[in-house]
Amino acid sequence: MERDVEVGVERREVFEGRCQCGQARYRITGESVALFVCHCTECKHQSASAFGMALWIRKFSREMLGGALGSWVRTTPSGKQLIGEFCERCGSRLFHQMADQADTMSIKPGTLDTALELEPVAHIWTSSAQSWVQLPSSILSYPANPPTFEEIFAAWRLQKEKVTALPRSAPQVPSNDPLK
Ligand SMILES: [Zn+2]
Ligand SMILES: [Zn+2]
Image (cartoon, rainbow, N blue to C red; front, side, top):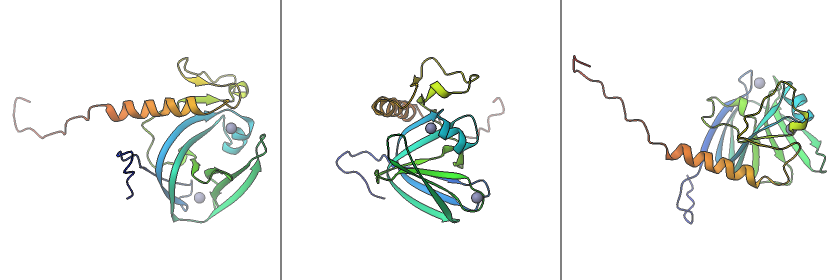
């Protein structure tokens, strides 16, 4: 594995997941930079649910462990091309990527094998959220697209630092002491 010598800190994380039918499996290695919820109309249609979620990974390498992917491209309101990739058999959306951003991809986090221990740090497009959705008062929220994602990146970095700074629980040593 490559190490970033200048930074001197290993920031690479591994994300594994699959589509609903299990044919398309992936392993993504990289640096997570944001996890947020999007309430826009496109995300509702894409997820066939109340909202979409996105886990952005930078400087990623992507390995398919099985299955064939189909893809679909839509033009965003800002005129950019967004590529969506999905299992060719069951249709589960797995990845999004902006055509002009080669170093960043988005994983649809509901496809991960293990639930993330980190929570979304922002909600966007809240102006079109379902009326029953209640946002935590402390979370970043934006009525539409945020003017920039810097606040969201910073909140995510902070959350990651808090989690990695937590003391690891001591390993459980089996005790033969009858009083315990
Ligand atoms: Zn599938
Ligand atoms: Zn959206």
